[in-house]
Image: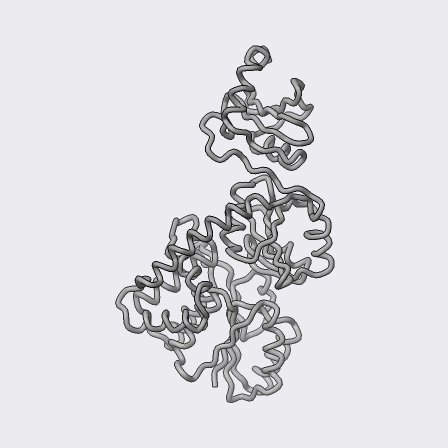
Length: 396
């Protein structure tokens, strides 16, 4: 009997679908959360015999289970194949039965589904088809967030569909499409509920934009929000709208989990997650809400006020405007960011300039948003400010 242990997200379920296409009724798929995998594997290993074949995808085992799997493979002549793409699992490559690849030679990030698909093709366990190629690539793009760069909303909608129906129903629908259709697409029912989900997402994002708070955690500035749905979309939107924050931490009190997202190439949230017994990708990771994390992300954040949003539809008071950019804050009042001829920026507050000269607009904005929780004001306030201060500003 073949047993596949995999994640219960889109990438993990993609592996489950591939296994059922390759092995049919011979495989039993075990879907796991990050926290449950090691328990499930340890329990299974107590009864495992050489007649079992063990596949593990998209989730990493701990050292204790790795040793058990290694003993099973070497001493009991059992079959083990571990396939993952998370940087935090790279150390498992020391085992002969493990294959962890973070990116392809051409620089594209991998996914567990794409790696497992290639493995099954190499072993002649599955036949390549056009619909299967497309679905595997959609899953890879969604899991690596490449879909956002490519504007490939079909990948996002595939993930949305998984979370709107049960895993069993999703599996059944995908297997039917992949074995009978010449081209992969959503049917009328799926399209209708996906359209409804997009409307729900927009309402959810509007609500959460008003709830985010910021605070320093270690060497980073973090945006913190309590959320239980649309985590990838929420983390991406809040990160883009608040680039002065190093990463976004989304707290789910029910599951006692923290999901971490960043839009910055120089920030690795898998390292942050690792401090709290978690892991994942450089730009998307998760960890447990343990006692230390609770203190930093919940208890210390509780007294803080939510950030005020930047004015969204300005025409004149826009970032990097050569005429200057106006912000407001509770602590310091208005803050006017003014460009100099040499490309640097200075900040005026109450008709006096701050001592610091900033090398770029982004550096100046990051400073006032972190230090004073400032927000971009509406055009009307901006125009009034310029009219009242035009002579003084020209002199400066």
